[in-house]
Amino acid sequence: MTSAAFWNSKADTYFEQPIKFPKLYEKKLELTRRFMQPTDRIFEFGCGTGGTAISHSGSVKEVVATDISDRMIEIGQREAEKAGVSNVQFEVTSIEDYRPSEPFDMVLGLSILHLIKDRPAAIQKAFDLLKPGGYFVSGTVCLGDRHNWLRLVIPFMQLFGAAPYVAFLKETDLVQELESSGFEIVERLRPDKYVAPFLICRKPLA
Image (tube, rainbow, N blue to C red; front, top):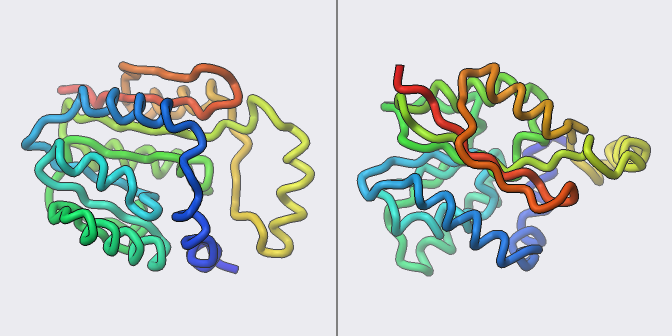
């Protein structure tokens, strides 16, 4: 099963699931908006069914929300229309294949970097998509900091198409990769090791 096919099969269930930590999610939204301006153009990769893109749409000029799953994008478009949101542009693509017409003020990569095989390349692409002084916001599951038993379970699940590719990285590895790409970390939120680290990084002006 390809990655796109896997996420197509999970899209409806994913959409129906309640947010696991709603107060923490709202805190992340609020923290992200501190770095937004009404004139900003935002790019999100791995947007899923578009909930976060739609939530931020009222704070910026435009959001380009992308995912490799056409079913995820279909649901996102439907929900944006229901909410009366017209400034979110949904597109089926990967960050590797996306070709922008102009740079963005912010890039969002939420709950996605651990699912990308060439993570350093994706981080570098996020860096390249940004204007100087722009921000990259990520929330990345770091299974290397916990749940080592999953190293045995996930490969078995993958044999039957029940799990996607998952990297077992640590937060220290993620930070090193971000900084190696040129980012400066300006905000960091992780209440405990069982929560994905939430990082806001800045691309230098020069």
